[in-house]
Image (cartoon, rainbow, N blue to C red):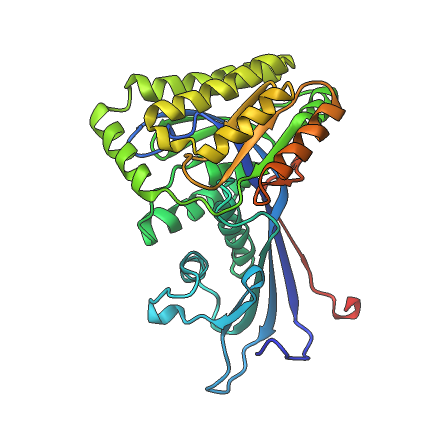
Length: 358
């Protein structure tokens, strides 16, 4: 099977999973925290996966598995039996874990409109969507919760990366979430159900600003991890973060946007106390502009550091929000507003297999 193959696939499997913003309580969903409380919001744009399934060609030179990383313009063969992940390790490791049946040939297309390294859990969303789609190739079905933990295991067990659990869970569940990690990595997820008027108003007020380059602060993160590991899971630095998750949950339930903005800002300040470099100069400049336009709060997404993105909660005036976005984008040609919509669903997987529809 090649990318130019004119054969019609026997099956087409689709999956999507939302990215994550406004992760108040982040850093407490980690192994060194031990237990945690996290608030976050699943939003569009989704990570998308599509699998085209063909009968396996018995020719020795026929490829069994092809990956098309559409954002990178790369199409390449994967050989799970070799145990080597050298092109896109996260994708290759996921395919090895999920085990494509030997009698199938597949092309796996991965695409996301969210920039890579935007600190919005994009890699987690891609992995959750990929796990969900690959799960359809074999008997039995993973629940969304199980798909999230499979995606987490791919990162921490197979690739030996540092990763909390909240990104994968948010991608699996979608919506507005309050998570309690009672013992790493085990967590419960409570979805926050609110009237449409609160949902729509929150959606209207939120702005996601990409700071112009992929998140990269591994050295800073290692310093913070060493500090927190030595301080223990119940240290004040982590407790300050856990409290903001509870405050965010309560604020959304009551429709109190001022309280939500205060919780977001408190979380960002707590991040800064972990290490000053977790709030970059670019992030501070965006925050200054947001303040000038009456924003209620701001959250540096993810763990913080250079690059990445920031979530802003605006006031009640739409024209003030639009003026803020214009000034932010004019301030630096790297800054970019990413349109977002709250996702009412998490991981979704579906299939079409009728040839007449092509």
